[in-house]
Image (cartoon, rainbow over all chains, first blue to last red; front, side, top):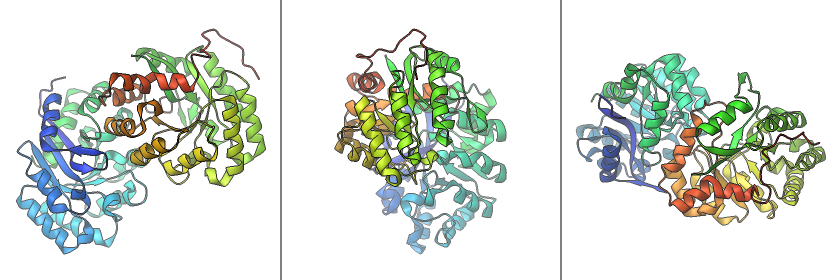
Length: 242
Length: 264
């Protein structure tokens, strides 16, 4: 289906991690094939966990159609904050954290300076959710309550079995958004129906998922035009300041 | 493109939510050209397995030749669980065994003696045993894979081939343990590429988890996860159909398309 608005992918991944690999050229090819105009990308693999400068450069220097979420491991302390400042100068549009890969609870004191920095920069924060312990989706909810002006995006939406905690959380925290890149259709429908399409972001989760899968998932929901526009374009444009 | 769904559910309810009927399930299978689906209880994971096994068989008999029931027993009961398993598997309608250790509240290591007896019985009947996997505390992919080593003659299936977070461990374990297989059920195309490349297309089977909530859209979405992986056509056919046909012995024992009475 060709959309009458510019489709934005809110969650792509660049780099190499275990069995996944994607570079900017291949992402652009996949975007073109799917009719995606802009992708918001974050680093994966070593660029996510330890080598932030390389990871952030990968997503921040990928060209005008790929915008970057910067990452830094909170355990790097002041060096993490320095890296976020560098990333902002390079045009980062938000912060990405992966508590499971980077090894912290979002509620730990060590992470707080990064959330404060994102708030100061007026960045949205996407946090990988779904793994038990560190990536507990309710840990993200606790942090989102403490920073009510900052949009928090539940990366992967708690996929798979922590999804069950998300609908209730949306009722408690207005600054919480769903990254739908790994979610099944009925889960997306429930959030749209209960809390409105303004809380949901289309994502591709390339290279783990495929645009074609997620676009068809949205089509089957038979959402009205305004909801489709919100999910596929407007919400991302607003939250990431595009 | 032939499709057999190796992982679906059929029950009246899940907790307080009604689930699709057998007729509803088959109508959706028809819409997406799925020949047959292996179906498991949901509420039977919480107790009274014999009653739920009977109910599951009756529901399947209402749609002859399309729904393949798997037995669920409670290994915490000890020998009576083995008795119930053998009672059900004596009925040729049942073609496999399903466990959900997380919902059933046991780690296999806690009930090892009974689980070994169950796996040996399943091996004697030559039916596969599928376990939910990919979630702690009782169903990590490592925990389930270890069970396959206890009884090498049993065919053990990781019910989600690692699910969201254990894809790479699943791929390695399926590759390394001869009697371990993976049901690709819920993960995404990039995960399937890795599973097939590492473990081989002969050991990966398609499943949807359809029927336990999630709406009718779950089935086509889960099929999309397979078809969008870009597998070689030969491998695609193995994952979608041929491997299930082999493990379920559908060539040797075709599904009856005629209504039949429940045997006990």
